[in-house]
Image 1 (cartoon, rainbow, N blue to C red):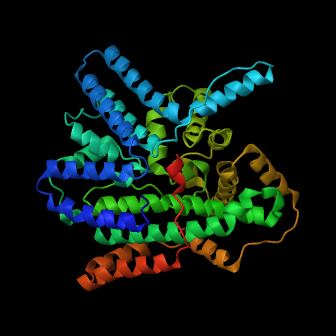
Image 2 (tube, one colour):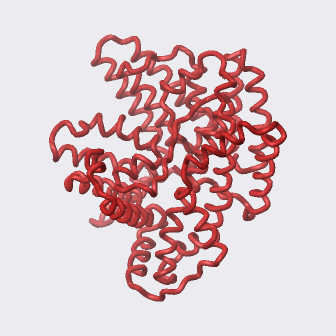
Image 3 (cartoon, helix red, strand yellow):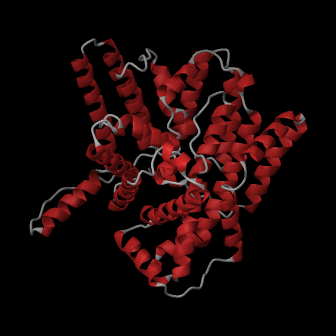
Length: 472
């Protein structure tokens, strides 16, 4: 079930009033929202709801055991077992075929044949996201940063809650579980902000991302060696806008929907293409994942505590694994490693950190923004290209300087500009719009979202492609 569909509109039209009718009956409300979330997930594949339940039950029990043990060694042992179970489940579905293929290719290179079978099960939707939610919960319980909940219902709710289930944002257990206690206060709903997050998200996904994809990007990446150098350059920037508008649209809608139901999610994007360094980019792009990798991978590896070499090693491991998290392919690994190398270079040159940012003058800031944007967009080619041959062909043709003509239509060019405007509009304009909506009369409050959604629907291309991050 996709957000920008009639099915979801009907689903939410049922869930929204029932949730608030049950607001004074918290346990029943949570039971209802868990059932609704499992129904939402079952739209992709019913039997994988058992996987979702098994993950929730495993981590609920592991956290209870860890919370009751006094011995640090025993707590650590249980934690490692739980982490291994979570990663084993993720690895089996997401990485097994990739590593088997590498094993077969490795043996074949030395003239040996091995008979190892592939699995033919589809990748369960959202397995990476609900695994990361589960891991953050048990790790925080181990660190004594969070007490284990005795309510299985709360864990089922936390891991399966439908707004963040499929593609985030990654919500920390301590922040979410604190919101499951007692009734939610309707006065805390930021109606204007929620409505415009949802409308803006629908526009970015349905109009900008979809038209950029179908009208230009897909064709360029399908056979880059047949495209002109100009089309490849434009395709690189167009994909950068497409993936931002696609992914930020999902999380904007998710944050808005959750708030309408009385729950607060963290911000996940903060104008990432305004970044003036790669470090700054990762403080703005998929912020919930960036902070997750920092807190649960980079810092446990030692962070920056053990000298320069160890710091650089930890950055490279974190970013390479972060790249591999996105998918089982060398392209994602290379993409992550490139970002890791860029972060290392910035540290080595003294360009990382807040102190360095404060010392930059206007020209240095502008130069840093320009270099960062080019690097990020070039790296997206590895992320989007369907194969090694594709990205090799993309770079070789683009830098060959052949044919500086374009097949981008004026309509797609307008869509491209609209996507770029999402990074230019001052935040205070959006805040002012939210406040005006909150002060408006009830008929206006009802009319604005209906009219906006209707206009987006009639302007949309035929069919709605899944969000890009569903595959991760």
